[in-house]
Image 1 (spheres, rainbow, N blue to C red):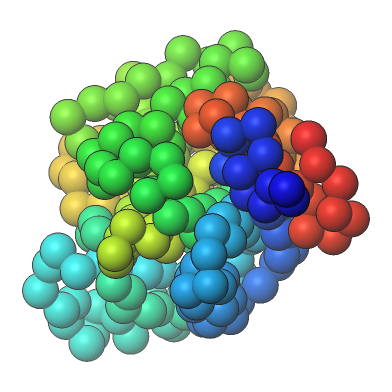
Image 2: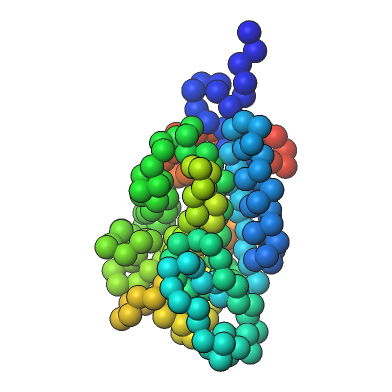
Length: 229
């Protein structure tokens, strides 16, 4: 009897797809492609990328005034409305953006559980850098009063999309033009800002993959080489 790869060792297999620097719209389209793959069976994927400067808004708010959006575009960033949860945030170079495309039926059919597992994954990464990160009443991962990782997801029929963005060596001045995630009197930070040294996305990825694998109890397959971890 041949056992499907997704069921070997009773651990879901997640394909790691390294996209590099891609536009936000291209990443949205790729998420749709990977979501459709679940129609023929488990096809879990973790898309890793960086974006050129872009502000994105979620579904939990009224549309932003056109003048505000035009101002953000004049700064050199794109602006897009999305179907994820959450309010406005920024994505840009130096930020590790992760889009898990998972069928929660193969993990746990709970959106609350899923968001908590994402937060725990990022907290583990931060702690491996020696940074004391934690959750708060607000979604995301925080270092004291500053958000280091924003989380905004979408889930339809237990298929997840969107995800989280961890600030590595992001230019934090982009956040000064908005109220990040709509939370007043809070700041933003990055791995580099906390450690007072440059921490690149490339340095962070291996720690993120290890933490994700442990937290979700899965096996990772490199989408480029088809090697498994």
